[in-house]
Image (cartoon, rainbow, N blue to C red; front, side, top):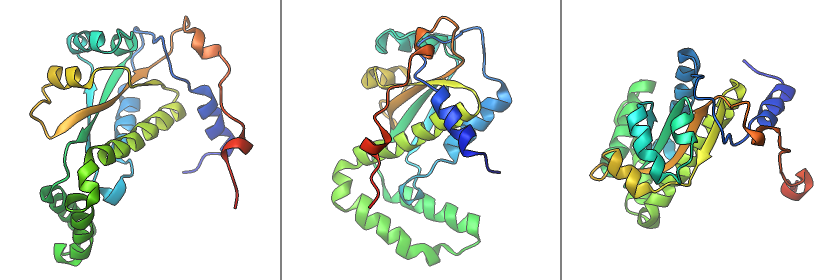
Length: 215
C-alpha cells in the first residue's frame, strides 16, 4: 500500500497548473471514481466535512460559467470541472449529524460522544470562531483541494486550481443562493494539451532551507 519517495516526488514535480487542456481526452471512469473518493476521504477539523463537491460535466453549464471565470479556457476544455462548496454556517444539526454518523460507523451509542459533541458546540457554534466560520469552512475546503491535486498527480491526471472567478455569479448559475453552501474554489481536471507551453517551464519553488526549519 506504500509507494517509494522517488515516485511521490516524481509525481509532484510532474504536476503543474495546467493552462491548456486537451478537450478531446476524457478521464477514464475508474480513474475519476478514485479521484472522487479522494475528496470524500479528505481530512477535516473535527471530521465535520463542511463541504460539497459539484462535478460539472454539462457543456452548457460550463459555457455559462466561463465568462464569470475571467474567460479561462480550462473551464470548458478540461475533462471534469469541480466546484468546491463550503458551508455558510455550522449548526447544531451539523454536529448531531457527525455524532450520529460516528456512532453508527464505530458501533457506539451516541451518548458516549457527548463530550466531543460539546467541544464542537462551544468552539464552532457558540465560541469566537463562530463569528468567522466562513473562513474556517473555506480552510477545510482547501485541504480537500490539496488532496485532489496530489491524488490526481499520482494517477497521471492534470489539474488547475482556479480562484479567478466570481463566486456570486457561480452561486447564481448553480442555484446556490438559498443553499447552505457557497462556492469557494474551482479545480479543472483532465489532460494537458501538447500546445501548453507551461508544461515545459521550470518549476519555481524556494529553497528547502528557506522553507523548512528543524528545531
